[in-house]
Length: 230
Image (cartoon, rainbow, N blue to C red):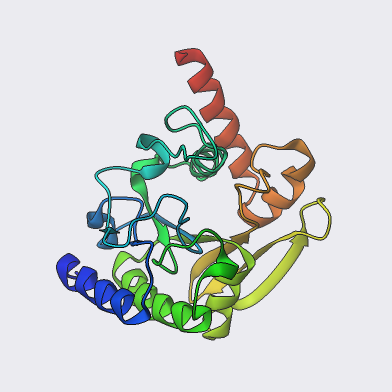
């Protein structure tokens, strides 16, 4: 198992070397999931609207997509109700998993208001891929889901992904992607905060193509159960 403190020190050293000023964050889940996880969910990098230079987070006490308030000075949400949190939880439901079962985090741990404003982006991706190759080798998830074109291309550039294919999501020129890393399925999605395609009827065909028809059945059951409990 990877040593949590050692990985935190590695990230902190790289962060200081880079001269970033908005803090960093790696996982959106407990560290224990790096030892064994049914699925992995990997975004590009954490937002930096509220970042502090001396703040670093290696993991969280639970699933950040379920327990955190992601309001900012510019946008206000109810706790756990930001568009991205809602979409990601729908994704997990479609996979037949609880949020607490998913190894979730960022490819690049360094915060920025948007991707273009992050300094030394190629170096940041190389650092992140080196780190996630080690994490995924111990977590051994059955499926890996990545969001954002850059995150997909980072895995593709290392020669990990074979049988890579793409399918239109019926939304402008955006696509979903799928392939295999050894025997593990990898799926690439557009960024779900800007393109809420999970549970959107117009995108069902693309989602079924990416994940299989059981995804829709799991999602329907999960949403029905939540409506009953409400």
